Length: 300
Length: 298
Image 1 (cartoon, each protein chain N blue to C red):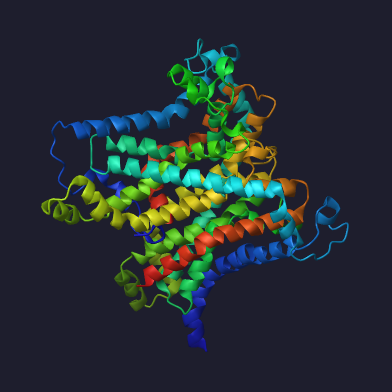
Image 2: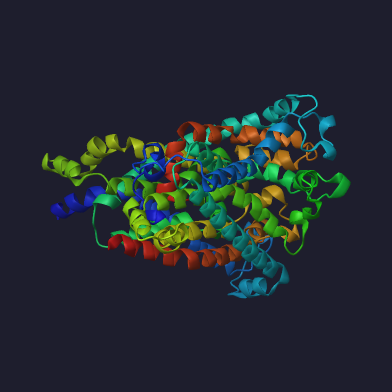
């Protein structure tokens, strides 16, 4: 018995505070949240316990998923995620490809491409709200005015004020902020490829394009997978940028995370919790297979 | 190499200058020039918002007409900066009081966890690690309602004290991940030597492992500093603009009475970003190290 304690005691002592914290604050709270999402707590009186609440099962979920407003949020989320993902992957890859071979001043380019990552979404939202101003013609400022100056006035549009596609405009600043991160991932991927592999390809007479297509791209697929998962899960949680550029009440830019905040502000805790669970399920579908895959890859 | 298992800290990008590969022959070629022009083009595009921020922040109220949106200020003035500083400085100091303890405590916890998970092979170790990691990816919306009730019920003061606790708690997964990956790369002999000398796990941790963890601590501290500084989600749920961090104060400034005065909000955005930008400029190597070894936190 004392031997057991000597063997198990110390590591357990070091790690148990964190295990308990994660157990309570992640898994425990998720369980309570699921429970809350199946009650009828829709008013402040119930939220503060002054009025009783009841268990209603999955009614909140069926109501939410059937409501056109929430469907609009989900549709916005999909659109935002597609634009954000495609944008960051393309930009990140192009930048990494441009910077792949050491060139003069490469460090400066890399640092500039990556710096927006260090800035908060709230701060960048301030300037992007100005850039994405929907005024056109005489009153245009921001990018619309820049398009006039550059002689391409037909590019002017009303950005995030478009009811159907406005959310895609919010993805532009998100791409600006995170393409550098994807670039960094791809650069690390490029540089992890042994030089011999490239040389071998060249000796075999492969053209530059073929070298990339058949030698380098396949080596990059694990990096690309990480990038997709990381950007994808960030995108699903989109909140800060939308709060900063638009407003929570704006129909055209709302996504589930914003709905959750609006429900919470109205003390509609049941629906807020239900939206949280829906988001969790969506993120888990993306993340869990990835975590399992990573754990397996590490073992072998 | 997947992002979650990258163990070299600043490895791939940090040493770009000492690349072992032979430099491509230096000669003029069309392809190289085109590439360089493309790089320059993207550089300018990325810097557009910076130009707007700086120029607008120095413009006076009368200088704000749409027609002059992209021009330099007619008269450079610092009044926006003064107004922004008055509005944001209390929040900036509060944010410092928040991020420093939060970063220190969560780094320390992450280091202990990382050491145990890297060195102690117990049944189910991988499952425990994966369960901790999942905590890094969850949308916090899924715990927010009970968390609100818990924090309110605990009597923890709203604002900075609550936020320190929350950043420590939800920082555990990422700090654990970064330290675990680092400790996996520490040579086994070092730990074994300590054990042979009769040191137990806790002695080994404090006398052997902790002293060699400095590089990892730098990476994790920077990472936690940046993400806590830039956090808005916890801020908006657990504090007000009177007692909250700078992201909340900035958002209120930009949405508030001065809505039409972009100069003040742009100066404010720059002020609020200065600490993290300084960290990025001075310690960029380690910042990238954090990115690469820890992937990202939402």
